[in-house]
Image (cartoon, rainbow, N blue to C red; front, side, top):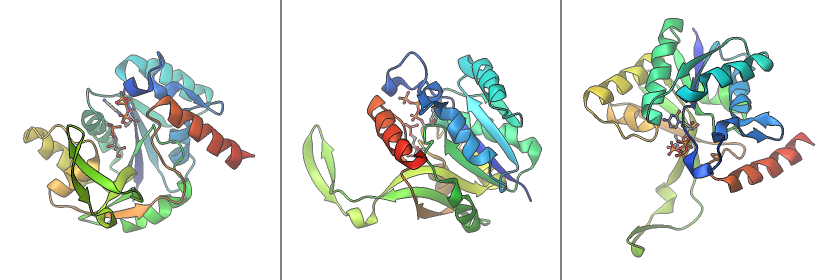
Length: 229
Ligand SMILES: Nc1ccn([C@@H]2O[C@H](COP(=O)(O)OP(=O)(O)OP(=O)(O)O)[C@@H](O)[C@H]2O)c(=O)n1
Ligand SMILES: C[C@](O)(CO)[C@H](O)COP(=O)(O)O
């Protein structure tokens, strides 16, 4: 049975604040989206890869993928939101009839691909698996800068990606969300759980933070320099 990877790179990177969308910015000499695609493309456990790219940058992405010899990556145009982009990517994947799918932010290029097998082992009918990070700080709930409540951090995690599911189940969850006009989910586990799925959280074995601001890029570079020494 096939396993697919869906890499979402359809955003504009507004918080990064550069004319080039952050997924095209080079991290130690290689574009961030290429690093994320390669994590899955180079895995023997992944049978097909779809990259969802911002519509204005599809041609540029295709040319860069070709330069890296990443021939078997299908590129589709993303939507206005991450949720729409994922849905477009899932529709593109349908023709490959995958059994499982790993949905990953292109903006998380540091993910440790050695965890692919472990994550997939948790994915079963009705059960998804998501890489997340346990909270170590005290977490406040506030309104207008006034502390309202201190939350129990023992029960709190920071969602990351990949987020992995039985393909038909997460596709159905996205379709139901669309028909229910539930359109502002910021991740896929939200939809999966809303429509009855159970999600297992797994800690990342390496830094797996999202490149959101320019400072994140500098942190990622110093980590990679050490790793690739
Ligand atoms: N319409 C969108 C919005 C986001 N994403 C992708 O979802 C991931 C996480 O989103 P985020 O870090 O918020 O990226 P951007 O939306 O580009 O960032 P910003 O909010 O700063 O514009 C990224 O890989 C991004 O490319 C997407 O595929 N389609
Ligand atoms: C999917 C995600 O990376 C999990 O933390 C996050 O929700 C993406 O949010 P963004 O606003 O699209 O970066």
